[in-house]
Length: 119
Image 1 (cartoon, rainbow, N blue to C red):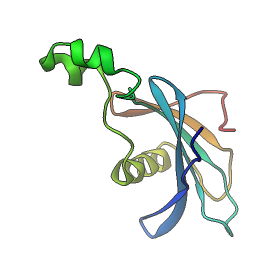
Image 2: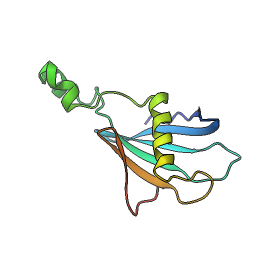
Image 3: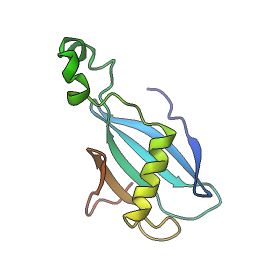
């Protein structure tokens, strides 16, 4: 299994760490946390991603005009991470204190998973 690459990003003057890991063939988990030296809570967002290598057969046999409709082929990008951080902050994620939160990104919207802190 490949090592998870940890990255940093600055969003609105605050530095965060982030990493992506596969959870199943159709999803990845994006984990975001305050940089070392700052106490705080983590954020985990489940993002749809159909790995092209694992779904090669179904992707190439699907009608070309429906591939983007049926499969989520866009990987997680730094721009997407920044957008998700802002959306989570607007949804009540408090970086400095509070519980770690888990969200699901569904059709571009960020939906909290009730009763499931990130862990």
